[in-house]
Amino acid sequence: MKTAFIFDIDGTLLNTEQMYMKSLQLTLANHGINKTYDEVYAVFGLPSFESLQYLGVNNPKAMQAEWQGHYHEFWHEVNLFDGVSAMLQLLRTNQQNALAVVTSNTATEFKDHVTPFGITQYFDSFTFAGDTPRMKPFPDPIIHALADLDVDSSKAIYIGDSVHDMQAAHAAGIDFGLATWGVKDIAKFGDELDYLFKHPLDITKNI
View 1 (cartoon, helix red, strand yellow):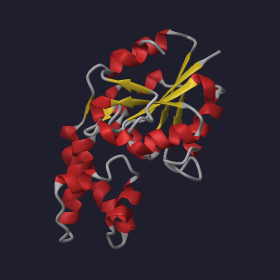
View 2 (tube, rainbow, N blue to C red):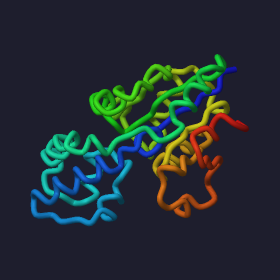
View 3 (cartoon, rainbow, N blue to C red):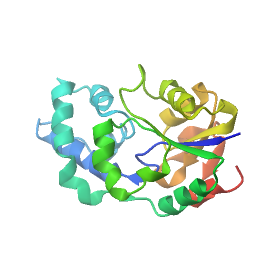
């Protein structure tokens, strides 16, 4: 029976924090809304439209387009976390493994931000923002991925870096593994973690 390794992108495989947060700060500042880095970091990992709703801005749809327009000004801040490529290669060598992406990125954002790093070849399935009626923390995108992979929930793990990731995994009935390299505060996850990974290569061991 296949084992499914389902991954979040931002803060898990790709270090996009600085790009998203600095471009958000710039966008808000252009409208006279000055936020500290810690204040905007509170929405890191949420879909961009929901982030702006959370921050209470006026006309979040227009602001979303402006924010996304600033991404490439901070593209130099983006990189793969150390060990991610080696981890994906090792998982891919076992034909009993199925690999998938479940992300709050749109398909266009994914193509722009992730494809240049050459890791899309390792995945069998992709679930983007808009592919399901609801997004994380609801289980819909993970359930969608499981169906796409034809893998039982008892043989799957979702690996991410946010409380929303954990909530979505557990709501879908699968284990959650925390990618600690993308997390500033592990305490907020309480005792609900199924796995805690300190380095990407840890994912290839003892599962």
